[in-house]
Image 1 (tube, rainbow, N blue to C red):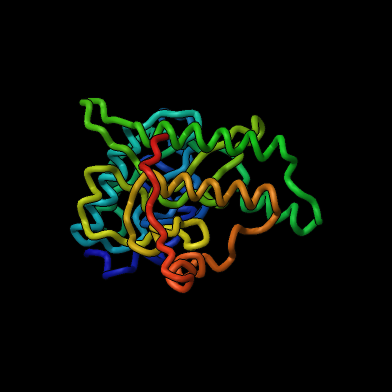
Image 2 (tube, rainbow, N blue to C red; image 1 turned 90 degrees about the horizontal axis):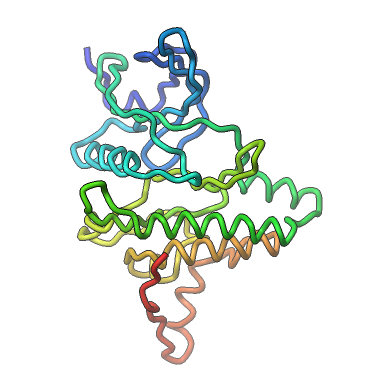
Length: 261
């Protein structure tokens, strides 16, 4: 018996045993996948992991994207990423589902931290803002210059650099960039341009044309930096920034030079 279309979208696996993983609880959802906290059962030893499954009944293109995400993530290794431990297929309710297991670390998102500070009338200290900015720029430089083991250049654009995808680990307070559900590599950018990510953190050219370059991530982290320093989002109505040049005496907004790392 196969899974009815889209049933997996709403199925909560918390409390279930899937393969050699004991699913503890649902952590969240982003891009194409849902992430659970789980325990890997390995010879009597339990290892805490985060495990990601696709959210939707997969068509061929979606399945290819999810598998590509697994392949790309498996090639990456950085203290600022959730590194992949295992990839494979699990049989869930009679249907094979691809998955990958990542490091699980206790963390708080930058979004949560900024929200807590805003409610208390406080600001993130300048030194903390600079530290987080430096750490995210470090991992973006790594992604933008990444290559596969056989030498294929990936030049990965994250495309969703936002406070809710920036994790602050406990207890070391190291910074991790998460959620590659809408990321793209250079050999995947021959398709028609499309708008992805959150408009408040998307570059003007990304909104206007959907064009994908590494500059998109630089704009996004600059918007995050503004939010850390000012305690509010940079340009709440982002779309107004795209429309403004068209209403200001012929001023044209042009894409700047390609940004590397």
